[in-house]
Length: 466
Image 1 (cartoon, rainbow, N blue to C red):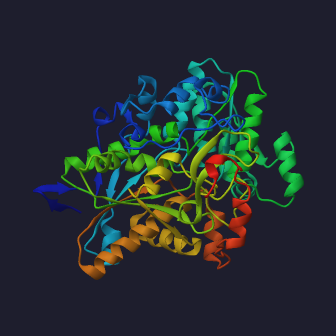
Image 2: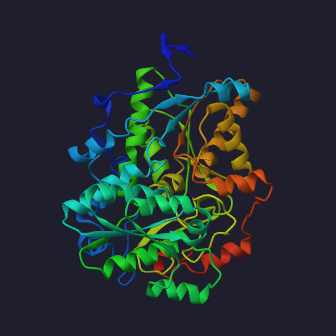
Image 3: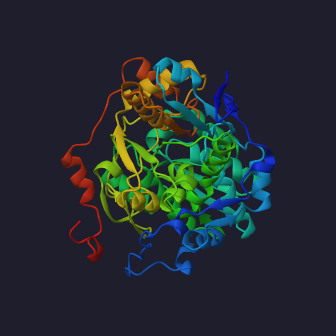
């Protein structure tokens, strides 16, 4: 199925050659007119130094994390060779979805699920595992929510010969046994979080004995394990600047593919949990917007059950529930916020990437929240016509892409919509089963629920008046 635009035929799938793959990641922070605030040491309330961060993270990623000058950071050849196993990923025109919706809009999606981990997470996992190996480390730890990051990191660690311990959010550990088994197949030890294996885990269980866990809990446990284990560091799958940096390969490939056919997006949509896939997708388009070269409508889509952007506070907060990490200025629900166990997908983190938070706060993008039954309705609608079963996380972006396309149907506008299809949903059949059986419910936290989370914000001068 082909279409004409600027005298060029647009195929259903646009593939790039290996030679067209990006040779450098794009650092959005370097292009921002106002940088986001630095991480703070919670003890001194002073900006964290590279030395302090290197006690938890690999030295190379700390250097990337603190870099706010270099727009492009070269991708090491070893990582580029690994990328070639599943990249470049296709940019797809959703012709059948357009036909179903009877919309004049053109809908494109960047598909990141064509690897064994089933998601975009491998883009940063291989980079971080590579740097850990380069540093001479023997083992690493991490957390995972829906399981995509843990699976991707298990693959990368197996490739580079690193031992991996994964603290998996307990409700996901229970709901997604097959995702857990993929991690174990690649050699990872997988522990439901919160657990009795760490001091912080035991403390959280004592306070919340029936909790299904949260990413904040799992981060606390993984960090504790890392700092107490010789030759070990903690690797994070979202939120931080270096993860957004690694994920910029998604947006860079998308822009290269669209430029080949003279396609200019009017709307770019991504699901938003911690913010890394969204930040990666928008990277080159946002840099152009920051330089006055476009006026794209960027939309972050988050679950109504964990609405950090749409209902959170822009404040300094801990990145983990155990309050052991540096403080980050971000949109947050409070590190003590516990998402509802009936939330079926990932996107259950209490805060948002400092880069995404700053761009949102400064008005360069907008955010919407959506309820999960509507998300799964959009997922099934998409799967039935486009042939790919999307991850619940990705389906948040699909839902809003459909909404935007239907607006075009009403107005007659022919907008070009790009969204990120971050992964596949074949390990999420428990959630799909709940939806198909009519057992899925929508949970929206009350103001009182949110206030309990906000009460956990640190009482520091930087948060006064927030």
